Length: 136
Image (cartoon, rainbow, N blue to C red; front, side):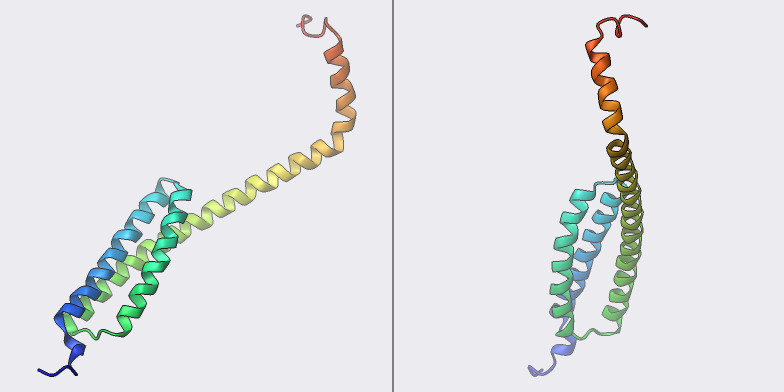
């Protein structure tokens, strides 16, 4: 067997498939984090996920798979993508939720700016009136 047959090197194929399984494990964990709404941890995991994908992409270009390994890779990729789609759906939902909260906060700030000068004097007068708290 010559050195020119790395295309079906079983060790290289096993290493590549193990990397895909590691990626699947990582994305399953990230999916759990998204479902638990642990956003900070999810973002931390996403960073290492991207690094792992880049490493996998490089490894993938150097290894040719036989039919069985190719089928396993397809199965793993489908599962990875299913989780990734769900994570993205959860992140979009969270982004929309945060957008609404920001909008409400901005409205409250605008109302406060508009009406605070008039309310400030009334609040000051109530605080000066010792009977205001007793007259309930």
